[in-house]
Image 1 (cartoon, one colour):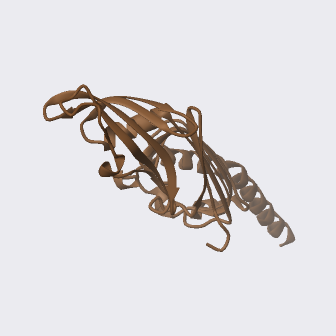
Image 2 (cartoon, rainbow, N blue to C red; image 1 turned 45 degrees about the horizontal axis):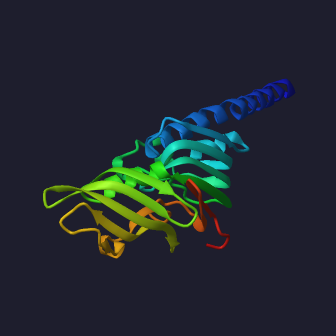
Length: 238
């Protein structure tokens, strides 16, 4: 009887050891596959762990560390993004379901003890979203400075292709990040060179963490030469 019990214990120990070694690799591939679909990028690297590892099958992770490049975060494509978390719970339908268009740009996490996100927005990021969001504007070139963004491009206005000069800045409000146009000049048009307030076009939303179903709050937006660094984290008690 003792021998039988010993064999059973050994089998259980071996099985647990196997799952502890094998499951993290399987879970990492699953997380990478899901985020590749929702962040619309082929460049995702994930490292996950949990003890016991079998908890990951239910979406419970002791630690996650994700890096993605050329990824869609919210409505904007970022050059790179990192997400680090502890005691993270990911909904099972996210892990084992199929991403749809409504999931684009989202990182759905149900809860976590710690989450830290960092993303880098570049001039190319702004070029892409301006051409998508601002009607009739095309051939855009963006220069990012420490205090403002300068956009040169063309637009169709009353059948005429004109040069446009846009100035703006990136700012945060609530739990979202926006690009605000502060000046618009129409060049070589029947309207002359006059400047028009960017308020008439509305602000362009880049990222809204609340809509992403990601339990983080915007911490900081640092606009530098050539890039904007945004950080968000899980705030305890919220």
